[in-house]
Length: 333
Image 1: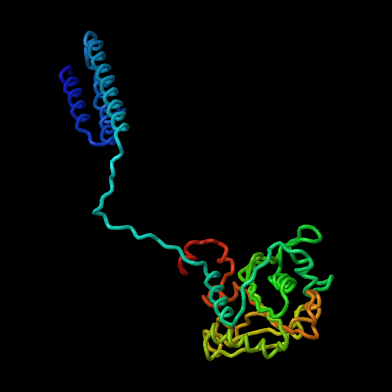
Image 2 (image 1 turned 90 degrees about the vertical axis):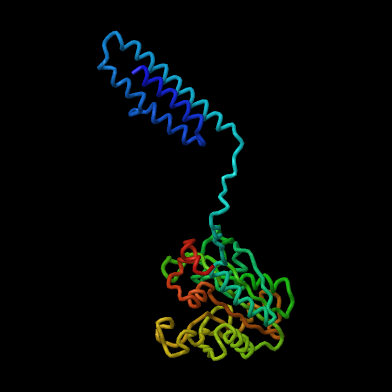
């Protein structure tokens, strides 16, 4: 047993001297000193020794254990003090970097904005925290209108804007006609969240005010937008509708870009896709911003950005836009 312990100590010295990594050194320590280690095995075999040999062999084992422990610790410390080595294997194949992409709402908005900028519209924005005047009163919305209660308020005056029309009011307050603007932005309403409704959504609203603006001007602008957005053969439909800030008002729809009016699941068999509302700016709105309704007329239109993106990409759940699910977003990268 004496010779075996001596040989074991010499083996440990040689293996640690030739070790090329801290992992190798730690492996030697576990092999020798672990619960099932080779040196520990000597201790378990001491029961077969005579009473006279046990103290001597026990001393040899303890000395060997202390020596091996010291060798392992010294070797690990020496490795820790070495300068780091560049372990890059230049022969490995490269790893492609996954590139991000624009959010589908951003892509849809850029497409809409590009068309209207080409028609001379300017992009404007306004604050998302609005006052009651710009969000409701100046837009000819009466005091008892349900919309005044269906919003996120900060006291009697301030609220999160429910529509980007407030940005149109702010622009007209600062700018004399002619006005030709597009107002995209985030809006908020306390709607019940489901596949087609969210408390946070985006609108794109347009406004044109000048002398001689008529319903024919509105139809011409939206018809041109429809052809550029959906194709030269697209048809447009106006149906009477009511909005407090326009008179007359209309619901705007285009022939379904998927079935071209034949009827499909996207348009629910109607052949038409409703995109939003429009109409001639109400004279009360013009008076509220200091414009003379006897001299100036204008039109306004609005569309939901999420709805346009859902139609464009056949997305069936509006909640996907805010879930930040990378699997969903990567489809548009």
